[in-house]
Length: 161
Image 1 (tube, rainbow, N blue to C red):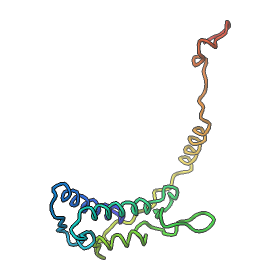
Image 2 (image 1 turned 120 degrees about the vertical axis):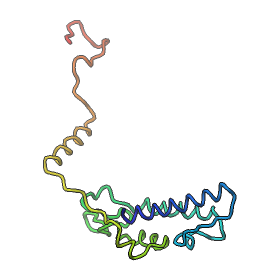
Image 3 (image 1 turned 180 degrees about the vertical axis):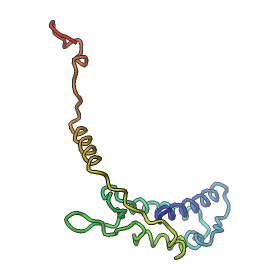
């Protein structure tokens, strides 16, 4: 589990407690001390749910960049240079996620125990060529036409299947 997944798990936990409190119309009491300080504002489950939504929006912005597949870089931390290289080399180093994790009570021991996202194995040149050809063919949007595809209304007197 990486930092992003750990924070998501914490938000899920708090959100479930807030929804239970909202549905049961009881005082919102977070028994987990790590999240109680962050979410309990006057005992309101509505405030906790809004904070969970805000955290999920931050998590959505700060995730692995799908266009930068050779490194586990954070998509939301911006880019630099002509090649739009990510400002953060590893998702677990994202300052926004580290701040969220702090708010959820992460400890240095927990942080040290989290997995660090690793870049995927590089593809062989043959796999890359096949991917290129597949994308190039999709770009054309056509498939070979055979005579069996010709509508009957267009078949002339000398039509052969």
